[in-house]
Image (tube, rainbow, N blue to C red):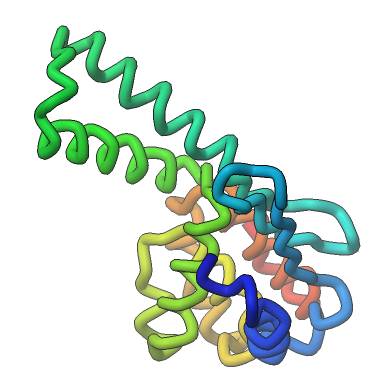
Length: 177
């Protein structure tokens, strides 16, 4: 996959962005299943050695397939030769899963790529849950920015709220939601 030969370098780069108060508490792991057909596995974000977010490719792809199939049943459309429609249904399912916080390992790598290549201001405006989480752990996001985010965080996914609370707690800020 994208980072398999250089994951250790990407991890070191990612860890360099983690704020001091969470440096020893947050970790990232990539677990590849060698016997899987595509050798993908899962990416994990841990806090205090407890998994807070697991991005399993097999789980995400299975759920994407199920939702695509459900949509076909709902539409009563079983034309499997229509490549464009098939791709569209799959894309819709994938986008919905991402909104719900169900990710595959490849989604983690894609989010990392975007996060590494965008200014922090742009990343903070992202609608991607993973990118938002990485921003909340980032040392470039200070207490003032965290304070300004308080109201907006209430409208974010539960995972983003959890990482916001973690960061506020780590910074000894009493503004957690």
